[in-house]
Length: 84
Image (tube, rainbow, N blue to C red; front, side, top):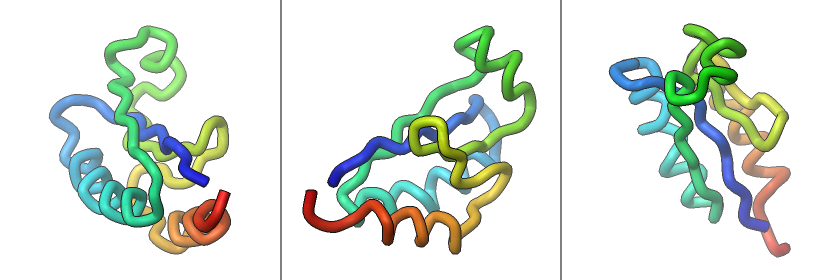
């Protein structure tokens, strides 16, 4: 079952770039997609998250905040990979 992970980020954020570089290949290897969303492009997201990026979500479920939580991502991948 393929899913799209939402990656909340902002331009020029080195932590965001590092996390995206680590998450993208793992997500894609599991058949999933990573969609980056710039919080600064949406006033509601900017108000909600402020400087609290990077964030990785599956719909409204948070997987990681500020840095890659590899055990949490692997657990998510394990639960969300396989035949649909």
